Amino acid sequence: MDLTDYYITFHDPLWIILLSTVLFFPVRKLIWVLYVRKKQKTQQSVSEEEKSILKKRATFTAILLCIVFSYIYVKQVFS
Image (tube, rainbow, N blue to C red; front, side, top):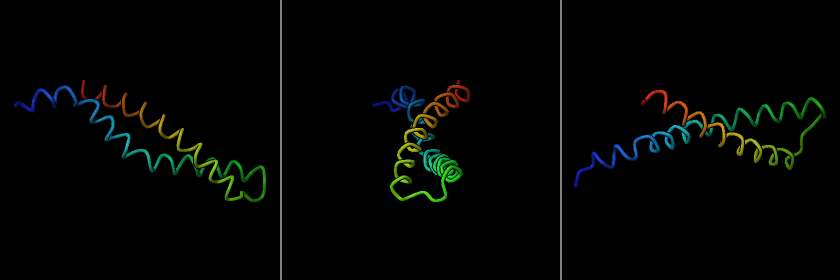
């Protein structure tokens, strides 16, 4: 069994998943902090319920951004 064929086939998806995973946590935290600060400008305090809603929003946005950025990066670097 030759592993070279599998490596060539799964090279790009593997790197995209790896890079997306590594970028996800800092990007989500950054987006969440920006959402909370924006909300604090309009009102004095942000409740824990609102913070959890904003964190869910930041999670969704971070997933999309990380996957798109990782895909573009891998295509540019490895092609």
